[in-house]
Length: 351
Image (cartoon, rainbow, N blue to C red; front, side):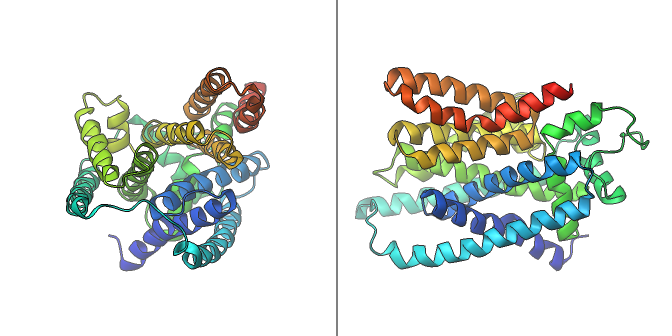
């Protein structure tokens, strides 16, 4: 049974900390300064940092608790920077001009915002009570439980024996997603199974909503009215997309604790958001840094994320160079693809 301390720690680690981390990253990269943007950027920053840190730790066979402690210290340090960034943002917010709603649109905006919140709450509730379970528990939950039990990372076969070949090691060297659930379980005191199947999906639904809202902000920058309307329509389409257990919509709402589900339901929309922003603000170099960060985080989630983010970034780079007639910017896309190239080459060399 969950205690109040468990719930408070989960809110701090899956709610407050990503916002603070996102505020620090957004200030550094000069990105949008609003709550949904902070939350989305913060989560992807955490995953990119985990990828950069945990992969070498696995290779050097550093203990799980030692790696978790280092990771937590880094997140806390970035969060302190995020507090400072929020303070300075509040000081300058009054001087910044932003699109305002017309008086006649405010009532409609409030109605759709309430509708959006109710719809997201309905989805979060059903995500918790109707969670889909399958054989992937063996590769996600069991590995996370094993980290807590043995204080190692991906060094034990699922049968319980010591790994006597490189197959298990190679599989998670590129995408150590189970570490995130084990890390959260360690510091919240919530059992791994509950963390993956009940708590983490709620955060993923909120994260997807934040990404959708930012997409709406990109599509309808001049009129905030249409942003919650856009989110409502996207979630309704997601509800209608649950035609089998293999669709991206089902992955997002019923299997959202799995790395490949986060790639399909959140990672790819986040890439589309960056591509839209790059099309609008074609020479904002900070967006290429954000693209590299998101690509790195998708490598952390799944091998599918490594492949899809690389393919999508490469395809958009060609479009960008040819149709926008800016071939010199291909160098920045190559920089953004470095995580995919490095981890992909490393995986192939070990295979």
